[in-house]
Image 1 (cartoon, helix red, strand yellow):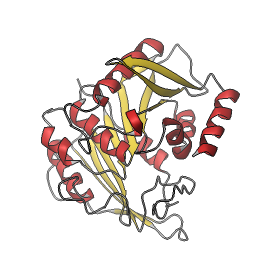
Image 2 (spheres, rainbow, N blue to C red):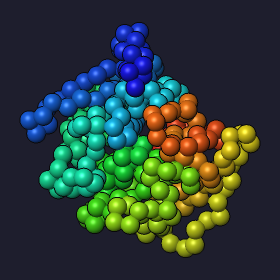
Image 3 (cartoon, one colour):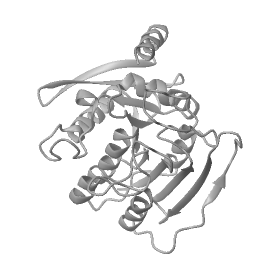
Amino acid sequence: MKSLITVFVLACTAAPALAQVQTLVHKDEKRKYIVYTPASYAPDKSYPVVFNYHGGGMSMAEQMLYTQMNRAADRHQFIAVYPAGIKQDWNVGFGMSYLEGSDDIGFTEAVLNKLKKDYRIDSERIYATGLSRGGFFALRVAAELPQLFAAVASVGGPMPEPVLQHHKQAGKVGVMLLHGTADQVVAYGGKQGSYLSAADSFAYWRRHNGIGGDAAHPRRIDADAGDGAEVEWIEQGNGRQSVAMVTVRNGGHTWAGADPFNVGLPIGITTRDIDANEAIWQFFAKHRRQP
C-alpha cells in the first residue's frame, strides 16, 4: 500500500485543485475525507455527488486509486468523495455495537452538510457506493438516510443482518448489488448471522421498494472472452427506483474493470466485461431523490 500512497501524494501535488484532503470534527473526533472535483467544475452550476467508501483495512487514498472513479467524475461531471473510516473500518454491526459504535452515519451527514457549504451540489442527486465493508456501509446509508441519498451501489457487500434488523425508514432508494460468485472474502451465498446472500439482498430491496412480480431474465455480458468471467445483469423498477443485481460469474472480491489489486488475499478474478464505474454511474443517473 505504501506505493499507492506515494502515487496519491504525487497526484495531489500535481493537481491540488482537483483532489483535496479535508477534515471536520464529528463527536470530538477529527475525521478526514478526500473531495475530487471534476476538471470542468464551475461555481455557476450544481453537481451530483458520489460518496465512495473504502474496504476494511484500506485507506481513502487507496480506495480512490484502486477504483479510479475520478475518471468517471471527469467524464460525467460529478463530485467524488472518499471518506475515511475510524481505524479503516465502517460500522455495520460487525465487531462493534451497531448503535453505540462509531457514528459513521452522523459523519456522512456532517460531510454532506460541509459539502453543501463549500460546493454547488445537486441535493436531488446524492449517491453512495463502496467496496466490501464500504459496500456493506453503503447499504446502511440506503437504510438510514433515504431522505438524503437517491441511490447506492454495493460492490462485494450484500445486505448486513444488523442493518436489516435496524431498518426502520420507509423511504425508497435505488440499490445496485455487484458481486462475484467466486468471492472468497465476502461469500456470494451469504453468511448466516452476518449478511444475506446476493440473491436474498436483491429480493429484500425489491420488496422494500415495492417492486413485485417475478425477477426479470438476466442480461448476459461477455465483452472480454479471455478474462475468465461473465456478467449477468438483472434489474427491475417501480417507475422511480430500480434494484439491480450484477453477478460476475467466476468473479472475485474485486472492482470490475480495475487494475489487478493484490494485497495478499485470495481476491480472485477482475472482470473486464464491464467497467464498474460506468455501470454504477449509469445506474445512479436514472435516480433522483424523491420529495
